Length: 95
Image (tube, rainbow, N blue to C red; front, top):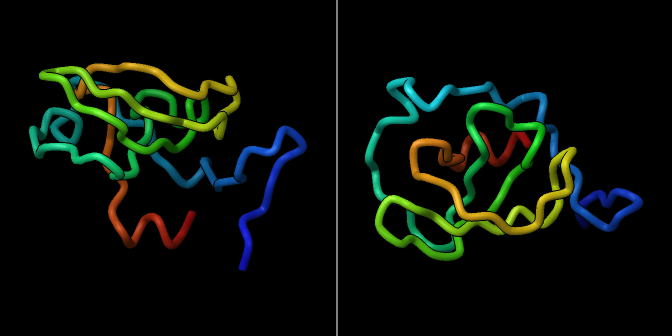
C-alpha cells in the first residue's frame, strides 16, 4: 500500500496519536542511544515537526530529516537529544 501524500508531496501521518513529551520528562531524559535511520518525533509539540529519520548523531545533538511531515513544514533540523522521542515498531504501525 502506498503512503498517502499531502498536496505538498509530504507523507501523511496521524500525528494526533503522538503524545507531547516535555524535555524534562523521564521518557525524554532516557539516554538510550539514537541510531541512524531510526524514526523519532519532536516531543514537546509532535504536530509542529512531524516524524523524522535520524541522519546523524554528534554528541548531544541529532540531525533529523523530517521531510516536511509536520504543520511547520520543517525538512531538516539539528536538535538536542532530550527533545527527540524514539518511535518503536508498535507505534509506527499505528501511524
